[in-house]
Image (cartoon, rainbow, N blue to C red; front, side):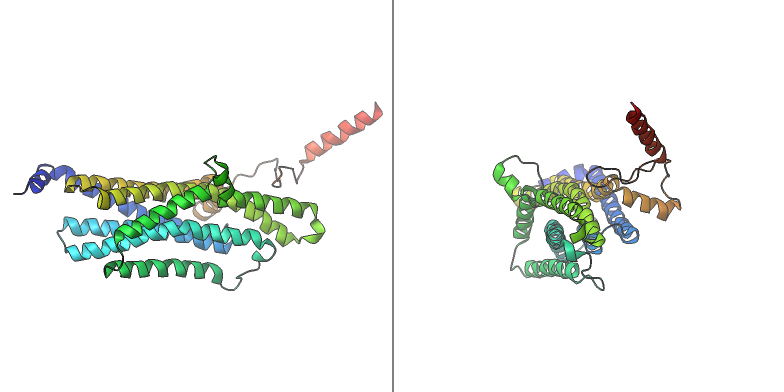
Amino acid sequence: MPEEDSELTKHAQPFHVANAVQLVLSSIVVLWSLFFAYLLCITKVYHRNLQLLLVNLPFTYALTCFCHMVSNLITILNGSEVIVGVVSNIMCTGLFASALNIFLILLERSIASFLARSYEMMDQGFPILVCTFINIQFLACVLSGVMSSFHLISNQLLVLISLFLNIVAFVVGHPLLPAPIVIALQGFALIPAKAYRQYITSSRNLSSHTLSERYQLAENYKSARLLNRVVLVICVTTFMATVVYYVGHFVIDLNKIDQRIMDFLFIITLFVQAIGIPVVIAALSKKFRDKCCVTFCGKTARVEHAVHIRNLKGNDLVVDVHRQRDVYFTEYQNAWR
């Protein structure tokens, strides 16, 4: 018996336990991703174009985890290596699609910022813009998968491209690195600043901006702030998953046990991403939380006696009656002194 097979037999129980844990985690990721996509569809708290892109997120990493789960099942059942190869090709295209998600969101938010006056009225009948983005994304992924199956392009190159896209998205898309040249290139760092300047300009020139335009500018700023955190989670977790997959399959010649360890780390990173993105959105978006409460609990959020409605600058738009009375009599008293 070869040395590798004897080593595998010696660790048969941990090997099967690791496989079982991976299958459970993969199943959780797939189910949770579909549930999160359902939540986004029923709550409808974002612009329809952005909502479609956010729904597209869980589908891409659900596809990757589903392929990983199928590959594990085939391996456990000693299935065909050809089927495992095809499933691995689809999983690599899923990683590629996950990397493209970040750039689709960046492109959509850039268009929303630069076309703020007309974006609210765009694609009212059918979201042509975002559907075109998503179709191009999956067309590129399908073509890359077909080319990989016919050995016109290697899975190694696909994973390297995904790794490169994540590095670029992380450097360009999030304000963590202090170098001036990086700060100058930060797309997601610039979008909130531009959206905020547009909102301030509109609030100072009310006559030249309709109510719908001012609403769109405020929503652009809120969405950009939220997406900065979401993009950070996507970049870090997808980058880690791509590195683990690349090292485990193309860099180091591992035995079957070490290969299982790398696969376990891979599924853990995708599990963190699948759980992390909904948690970040729920933690930062009160509107999303309230809609979920209404949908599943049948009750609205607790109404406070003192209603605080503020604009983006922090100024109160609705003043409490008691505060208004106190201010009035305080000013009246000062006038008599």
